[in-house]
Image (cartoon, rainbow over all chains, first blue to last red; front, side, top):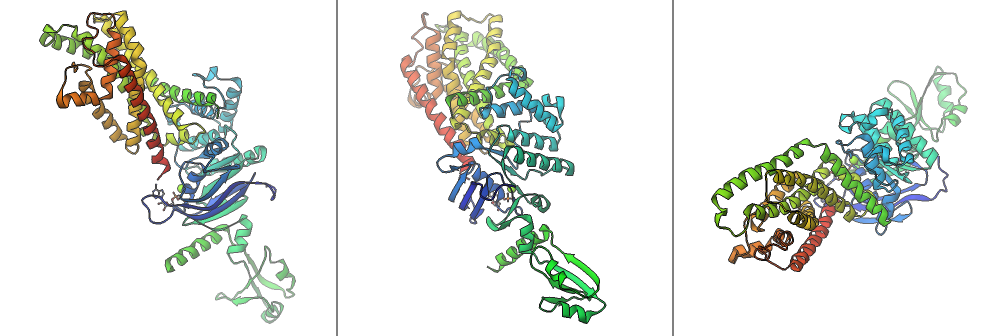
Length: 322
Length: 263
Ligand SMILES: Nc1ncnc2c1ncn2[C@@H]1O[C@H](COP(=O)(O)OP(=O)(O)O)[C@@H](O)[C@H]1O
Ligand SMILES: [Mg+2]
């Protein structure tokens, strides 16, 4: 986890994007601050404006309004400096399928000026060859390194794109739906890899996803919909902030239980149990007041999914009313 | 970014095109087929029917013009592969890199140029084997002007890519629609130096006219027909070619980039 006082590497203020043919903005006054070394997720349903936001942050798309700073550079005047300091995994594949895996990597390395271009792998500098061999081991592809990418499975291609986006050691890495099309094992190994990059290189990572489980693994989550930031916080704090947490209780001596709970919000439920809401992360304080022997004790701690669905649902209901 | 990095990126982009080209057997076969068809049919038909009373060797005349146009066309075709690559998503990877947009496009022109020269080489070999009237002066003249053919073709490809960035089909058709009239109106295969009226205007509107004119002027230097087929002084041709190519290059690059950026 990064220190809270680390300097911001992504600063977005009042970002607006209205596509040409569209009457509704795809991004509508978005604010984001991401600090150096953080691993954050932009979580939102399809069409929320995640890809649009990433395209703007990587200087691939013009914005309609707002200010953006990435890696300490201003997007309006220093787009090239931003490009030199970021890596990106696009939502849509961007490999050349007619080239081998190694040729795709060599092309990238040359484009970013890491190594001088040579027309064959064995003519490339030793440092390059070692880096690529190490990446191949990481991918578990060995000699497939010299096979054309069109023969690779979807998951392999995705992983190749990810290691490619890290070859030039970017300060900020953007990943747009990185685990789309990956099986659970590959997903986990991708996350482990990203975590180790964050740890060893201090890379700031911003990924977008519409999978809640995925956002749960991030240091901080920004929930967006209709191009606006609905809320943000650590996965834990979001659960507390958004969704209700409560205990379900029952006791043989109902009267004593109710006296113990005096002052707390108690709701009798249809199944006969008492629902008691509590504040904070744990129900410790509430439980300490109970003297009666309990027959039922259940803690309801919402998943991020419930929190998310509640939030996006609320938003949708509000949107219809307005 | 340093000039060295720009040159390196440009080289990598050009080299990638060559790598793909090397794996594409279809186009290699085509490149051998075309000169044989040309020399067999063109020489036979025109030699028997048309060229009897001309004061110059017609096959030689057409060969110089055609080579110029083919060099331009092959380069143009490679540059417009940008539009296909936009469709497949690969241009995302190229354009997000910290490299000047102009270097990227110049890389496509350089790659296309190398391809064009490789594709044209069999033409000379086959032509020589068939006993076409090739002299050292003629071939070296063509090669001297070849860079301008590659530049013009490349720049035209950039402009077409900029205009038809969103449709690979449209850009393919545009290449043919642009090359076809140039082939005839530039004087590549039919002399145009005495054209007047509307045709005369059209001839002068074709950028390839200045290319073919310059190529012949240089190829025929020191021969008896030198001057008789010439349209403009070499300096005029050169000036027009450079200005037109630069304008197409800049306009096409800016257009292509804005399709992606200003959605
Ligand atoms: N090129 C475009 N032109 C017009 N509207 C677009 C374009 N691209 C995306 N949109 C719209 O912008 C909104 C946000 O899209 P996007 O950023 O792709 O969302 P997400 O990545 O969160 O799924 C959607 O309503 C989408 O239809
Ligand atoms: Mg998206």
